[in-house]
Length: 297
Ligand code: GDP
Ligand code: MG
Image (cartoon, rainbow, N blue to C red; front, side, top):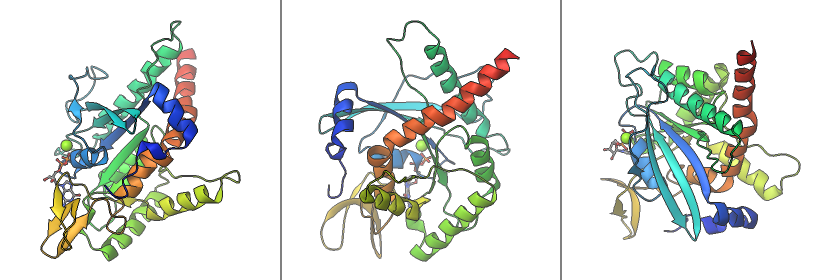
């Protein structure tokens, strides 16, 4: 596929390290049913992820509302292994009372911190696994209005626990102008509510290429994405992953059509290490400190 970024393009050092150890990267997909979570995940990794055996819920207190489902896959691209776990959250926002839809998701994230903490304090560290959630893609319905109460509530409850990456779902259902206006509204709402989303940061040590790349990513946020597992024929005869309309084809892998490529690049190529580092050094560290303090009381 054209413009499909392979792991071979990773910086050499990261590449070599990953060949040896393999990545383990945990991405969570949250949003109402039907917003295209499963489709996007399958599109992103170009493969159907296999559901693992049902995991025990993180806590017996988990309300029977939002289900937490882990799907994992070992993905191999140009000899680099990526162990990917996607945490899907069917049921989010699907109930009559959605006030606490965020709760089981928060509990899942925290229980992953807890098991990491338990491993850290254990003597035998040979089988150390990092199952912490490194990024949370939050799907916003393509309404064109502002964020809804459930969106704001979720992000407010979760933004100190996970790297939030809001995306506009099913962007092919909106016009370009509508998307631009919707993006501006969403960013204004996010700022108004003091919600912290993941943003690539540059510092004075970064090379100009990185700075430009980060600026480009920032300019597209929140990403407006289109997913499709099907190949369709364009009017000029190419076969592409996309969605077909009477007036033409929206191409998944075309940056002129939507921000899917940017999202994928950011997650898997340019910012995976940064997402993992921020999870470890800031989000987890804050959780751990608060937890140990409360235990000491
Ligand atoms: P989930 O419930 O969030 O996992 O959503 P699914 O991935 O199961 O998708 C629900 C429906 O939306 C399916 O019929 C998909 O084909 C369709 N769908 C998924 N992604 C897109 C998209 O980007 N645009 C449009 N128009 N439809 C989509
Ligand atoms: Mg699904």
